[in-house]
Length: 301
Image 1: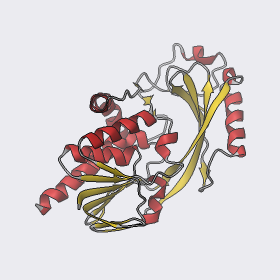
Image 2 (image 1 turned 90 degrees about the vertical axis):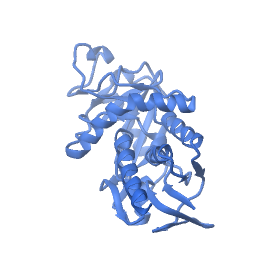
Image 3 (image 1 turned 120 degrees about the vertical axis):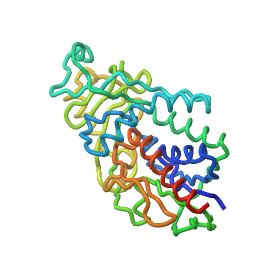
């Protein structure tokens, strides 16, 4: 029996598992390995004001901005994996930057930045395993208090955390898949995230990450319609990128719908519905779920 089973191996589920392991709990992380995981296609955006967050979500976003520098240092030390992080600001423009990134000079950015979500996930999972956590490539089909059922077995656990993103609807949670599509362009990147109109551009290493569409449903991959939207958006809002080569396309299912972070019933908790702000809200989400698990664990003892 595990003390906790976390269903979902994206950044949110993995960070919850890591924090619980740091508290000394025995944790099993179930990673279904499905195509379209939001973390692996994410922009890694840390932009609370540009995303229009308010209330508790804005407070959690600010917590993420404050927590990430220390968290990244901690994970890099534990895993040996470098996680690029920059908090140099976020620009929201009313008009396209016709002179390229030079147009940003003299403009005051809002607080925020970006990180590399794929490297963050790798670092979190390696640090989790180094603390004794277990990762199993299995898909949870059904859960009930004290049990998680996969295709081949039943896993006993005192606490179950549902953090499976868009797939959380399987367990009755009010989320749906909202596919995001993006391009990686061979061009000098901006100094930080730049929002114009319905999309944005930001650095990804020495390239430009350009995104993103918002398409309902489970249709996989970057479709022809999505590619046309991205190309039209690039040409209209970042004309200096028009001739940039497309290095690759990326896509993933955001968990759109109701943000649910808390206890569903005794023994079952949920952390899903973060939309396109999963990376930004991950530290606060992991903190809150950890607090609830520890509260229950101490009560049982």
